[in-house]
Every structure is written in C-alpha cells, then in structure tokens.
Image (cartoon, rainbow, N blue to C red; front, side, top):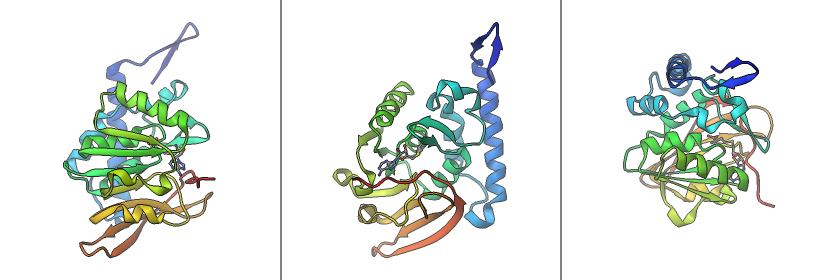
Amino acid sequence: MTARSEGKEVSATFEEREEDRRALLKKIVKEVETTSAQTGRKTLAPRLLAALAKVRREAFVRESEAALAYVDTALPIGHGQTISQPFIVAIMTELLDLGPDEAVLEIGTGSGYQAAVLAELARKVYSVEIVPALAERAQITLAAEGYHNIEIRCGDGGTGWPEHAPYDAVIVTAATPEIPRALIHQLKPNGRMIVPIGPRYGMQQLLLVRKDAAGNLTQRGILSVVFVPLRTAV
Ligand code: SAH
C-alpha cells in the first residue's frame, strides 16, 4: 500500500508489493475453491500460480490506482475501460489450459495485464485492442515489463487476426451478445475459447467453447460476470 508523508506520495517498497501480491494470490486460490462447482476447477495450474505471482499488476494500472493494484477488483484504466478483476483473469486463463508451445489470441488488450499473464504460459500472444491510446500504452508497458512474445494490433477484434490464425486458444475480454464468427473460424481443432456472452450492459455468462478434432463445437457456461461491451466497428 502507498503511504503519504508531508503531502507527497511515497511509493511502496518492493517487499510491501510482494506481500500484497501474495495476499491477493491467496484470495484468488480461495475464490477458485469456492467457485469450483461452477468452474470445474478446484485449483490453478502451478504454472499459472507462478505467472500470477510474477506479473506486476501495479505496472498496468494508473498511478492513481497503484495502491489498489492488489485488491481483487476491476479498476478503471481510462477511455471508459477497465482492467479485469484478478480472480476473473486467473479463472479465464486456467480454463484455456495453455501449453508452452501454444499461440493465443486475445480480444481486448486494455491495460495489457491479461496479455502478460498469457505470455508467461504460452509461446506467443496476439492481442487486438480497438482504442488506439490503450493499444499504445499497453505496448509500452509490456515492453517495459520485458515481454517479447506479445504482438498488439489496433483494430476491431471482432474480425480476429487472420494473418496469424489458427490459434490454440482465444480469449475475449469484452462482452458480446454472440461469438463473432471469425473467432470460431480462427480457432484450431482441439482449441479452447473463453468469452463473456450476454447483453452489452448487465450480467453476462462466461462461456467455455471447445472445438474438437473434427471441428465440432461444444460449450459450457461457467460463471456470471460483468465485462465492458465488445464494440462493433462502425
Ligand atoms: N484484458 C484487459 C481488459 C480488457 S477491458 C486487461 O487485462 O486489462 C476490454 C477491452 O476491450 C477494452 O480495452 C476495450 O477498448 C476493448 N475492446 C472493446 N471492443 C473491442 C473490439 N471490437 N476489438 C478490440 N478490442 C475491443
């Protein structure tokens, strides 16, 4: 947490942040246990736990929000958008079952935090963001944090990123009434997709979609969630 002295903000020490990060991790692990009947996961993969322990969420939030970086909540990142709640990032990533040789497509880069977590687990992350200023800022943050396996494109993610398709996994971090067709096409056989489905405002349902080896889709509702809407290109 951040302390104040003589009206000036004094940044928390590295050790204090470490403590906050550990406490948040504990909370996430507990929440995974509590929701296991719905999600089908009682624990998080050790690789994911290590990723969540490593990624410095404070680097992805605005300075004014730094003290809240390790609270399990979504936070504003400007342009009417938010960085997702850490538990939601954790469970969405868990359900993708990413292998170290896999390529993943993210729709909605936002702060870049989810992309960083994915980049710890997968070979390559392709992420699409529709707001130019956010795409630019995420690019800078991710470079500063030392990520070299993330590519960001500014544009409408509803059309996916055909040049690098197909993907082993697709994660959509904005709500959509239905799954954009292009994203289904760009998913490999045996691929996994996680996407919040529902109205633009209000509750949505996190959906886990699998494409089998023959290309058939199966889907399962996971949890009720609240995401900002996926914008459609005008
Ligand atoms: N994954 C982000 C949180 C995303 S919030 C993080 O870790 O911080 C959802 C993001 O989706 C916002 O940044 C929003 O601008 C973006 N978005 C909305 N519609 C989009 C679209 N059609 N294509 C790409 N990005 C979109």
